[in-house]
Image (tube, rainbow, N blue to C red):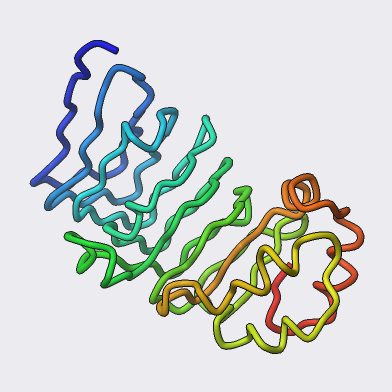
Length: 208
């Protein structure tokens, strides 16, 4: 792999612009002291090409054109009134003080994921009540740690119980919501979306 070109977006405010972060040969640094307002951000790079260091996004739309996997650095961003579209897997959003430097900027509120496909994504340290989660086949467990024992009382299909539900209490203390994708879970954990939904429907603490 050759040298990657650094694209630095810092110390400025950008309003009403369309930003394309799509060059595989670039490292995109968002922040510090970056404010994007009413912007459309096109993302088509892997998580390692996207570095967030204290950026604020207000009323922005993120169009994820290539599945974004295991990007925890959203917890270093402040997101307010933003929309997400596309596939996000293993991504964390919100306020996570134990995460490392930059966490003090982390926040999420009034955001809309209804046009996104979330799989193994978490809301950390922020109120999920202001967030619109994607509908089925995605489903979101609210306060997974607080509801862990209640959820363990159900008989879950396949290996979902042993792999996911039995381990909810080990999530970081600030985990406020966990969103899973039933079709992916079904393939990985020996069950079907229909079997999952039959149990999901029994719980008020699960949004689907």
